[in-house]
Length: 70
Image (tube, rainbow, N blue to C red; front, side, top):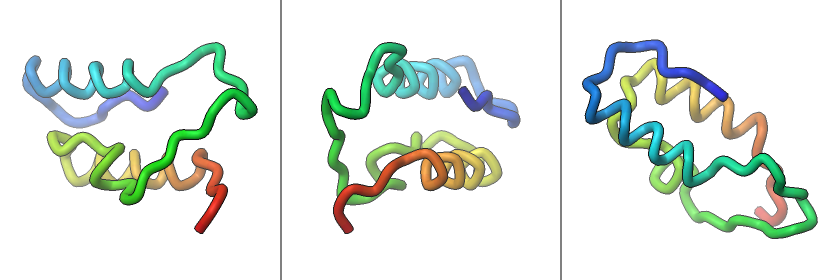
């Protein structure tokens, strides 16, 4: 998992950790389900991220998410 590299308040760090917890699964097979979203940045990227972490996270998501339908 990506770790934030910039300084965040405890509240911001908890918000980031909460989001990561919602999207983490150690047992999910790609055949189990798909998650659909319309806008990667609006729906998956926490608004509290600094610009540098935001860019790294978006790059990571684009690399790791399998696009099913465009």
